[in-house]
Image (cartoon, rainbow, N blue to C red; front, side, top):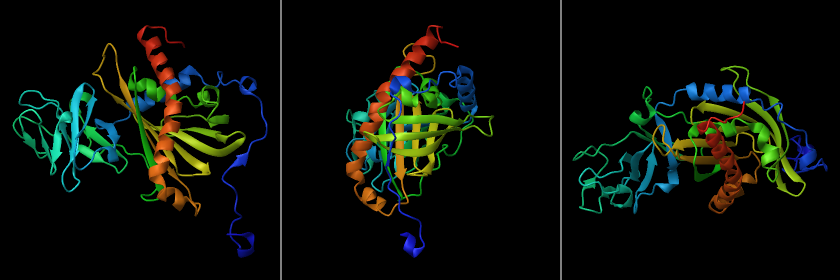
Length: 336
């Protein structure tokens, strides 16, 4: 809409950033990134209930035919597949007959058929095999493992609020690191490292509000996402941790408001493992009120690989942060 029709004036999505200080000349953030502040935010997150739900992977990775999807969560082998009608099933990933890995079996007409001796499973308890509660939120699939979580079970997982269905473009990236979920969550609850550790993506980052208590528990950040050269997208975003293994960054003002980046940390190894491994499953759901964003939704299959590559670049660095934190904790040398 133009000013002549009384509508809002069109503005370009990108801004040309004024030439600012170089990386070494930017304002240090180490005084603001107080270890006790990050530790308190992590403690509050870890105290919130999860209902024993764990993110397993992307919804679209669990197909309705062919191979099932397998993941080890907290030392428990899990297998997932869909029925002929698309209904999601999950359960023990070890065949109860002679221990075959069901993730390597086949789905035939919606039935999981073990490739060792042909035991057929339709998702119901059978021949010693037990199903797990499962939830598909349209972007991610979750499984409930009560023995692993050890909490009061909940009927549904704590799924973050996202842009309305059909308005966004989503992509899911997964990687694995040698650390525990709390190290991944602590990384995300330290927004101050953004423009120092990721200068290729973030500039002019300022934390404008810190968490005050369990009610007002968000980090609010003004930051510019670097696109190319001096072209940036300035936004205001908030970081919250709705449950122990999830941190959500939500754009609250600026281009792409309501877009979210969900970081989910799923333990692969059991509790107190000597060499813990954690899967980082990051879901990006981008949205925009601009009329032209309909073209982005139409081009979603081509955009998803680009979005995953951007996440992979960030997590190459952030996993080094999380893994280093675990090494220092496990050796008793954690600073602060």
